Length: 438
Image (cartoon, rainbow, N blue to C red; front, side, top):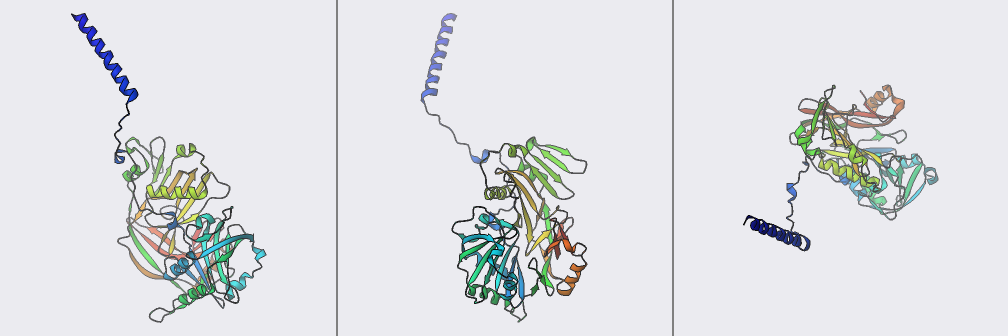
């Protein structure tokens, strides 16, 4: 009896095996889709931006004629009027040539003609600049970096010429066709020269020796700001950078910094400096060589910030990679408040973001952990020197011969729960560093 029962059980099991094999072989699987929210994913914190938000000139110089100039700073009504007016006009046909071949007396153009200089401090590649300006027709293959666009009227004031200056000395592009007219430039000049509602003259005259930088002939007014802030917490950063924060390990360094790692990625927090550095060497080393160009890598950098900390303020593309580094491209974004950039001489606490992108993958990311609280700002108007007082300061400056640029910027003073932004004259030196005229 027992043997019969065993045989029957064996036959049943074999039969069920054949049935199961049949269904596995000939039936279509019915997968239950996973809900996306069930995946472990990094937390998105902070504000978002698109690349176009980060592409704007740091200064606009308006040449009035008769040796008169004025400088327009970001965020002012006059600046917006000129930049929007230029961005809406089309530039077409770019003739690459030697600057001397243009046969233009630039001193005469600067001092006698009406014109506009749109200046990008460290330059923007021409195909990236195309995202915010109406650059039409066939674009230059070299993708040179544009540092300045000079639009000026000829002596008759009916004809306008436009020249794009590059970061290569003596190399320019002359625009062959443009719908910017002499009347457009004249309208800009007229609007900027108008007095305010009380009849007070608004336009501040500036002077220059060689066009490298412009200095005001009288004091200039900016806002002095007290800005409360919070900071990213360790938990926020861990959840933002690591797929599974629970498996991260913590190491303490002798200098007081903390390192968090999941054996693939690393996050270093310098708490005394309120600074963080993220690195992903494994991903960068194994990235597929998909021939990412500079613009694609730049878009990857912007998207990475969107996903990991956000912008939390206004930033401008400051530096793009050198031409000799196609595979390992560093980008630096400069922080602004209102009209002026934040200048932190120590390169920590506030100011720049630095991102290194390798084949479309972010290998390194440095930034402040401070989050400005824009809801409770206090500010007051203050003036910084101009005219003879500024000339004297510059003449007394010990590194005067190394100065390549002079501009107003914010000196940052960071307190426990707030920071003060104090407008002052900054100088840029040949080695790329910045100092303030004390």
